[in-house]
Image 1 (cartoon, rainbow, N blue to C red):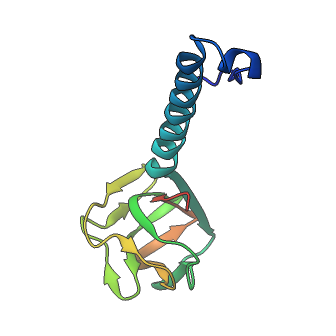
Image 2 (cartoon, rainbow, N blue to C red):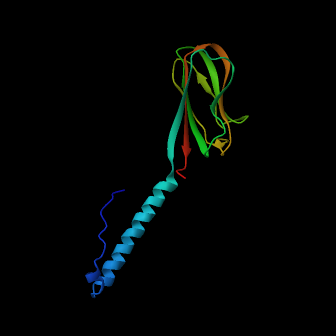
Image 3 (cartoon, rainbow, N blue to C red):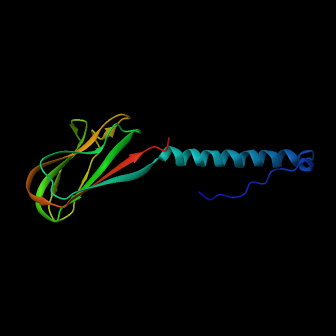
Length: 148
C-alpha cells in the first residue's frame, strides 16, 4: 500500500465552484486510505514459536499457556541431530488435524488446517513419542493471528 500526502483543501478553494470537487476528492482519498488500513488489519499476520529440546523424552512440552490471543496453528516443522521421534501438535488435549511429524535428521514439515484453532486462554503443546535416541530436537510452530 503506497502512502501519499493528503492535501487538505484550503478555505479559499472551498468557496469556489471547484471547491465541492476538491472537498469530495479529499474525502474520497480519506475513505480509500481507511479501507486500505482495514484490509491490512483484517488480514492478520503469520508468526512462529521455536522450541529446542536437547534430550527430549516422551511427553508433553508446552509451547504456549493461557494464550492471550486467538491463533490458528498452520504448520509444524521439526528436525533433530540424531535418532528419531514423533512430534504431535496439540491444543489442550486435542491433536491438530493432519499428520504428526516423523522427526529424523531430515526436516519434517506438516501442514495443519483442521482442529488447529487455539482460542484465548488455551494451552498449546507438542507431544514427543516413539523416541529412539532423539537428540537436539528443534520444533518450529507456525501460526496465524489477527492484529486486533
